[in-house]
Length: 72
Image 1 (spheres, helix red, strand yellow):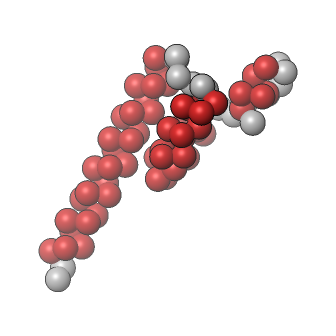
Image 2 (cartoon, helix red, strand yellow):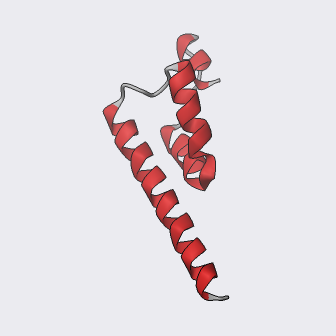
């Protein structure tokens, strides 16, 4: 939707919203969309923020899994 809006000079989804959705465990879908639609693949600032959010998400999942494992 965002790439279509960009092509038609319409209002786009803010990058902050895209990154927040990725941080909420939606990053695999975001990665798939980037690769298949070639969207947000060139903008360096977005890529840095995206991969930082992926790392933060993975770290949070790892921490949660290890914390839950210690409860056993």
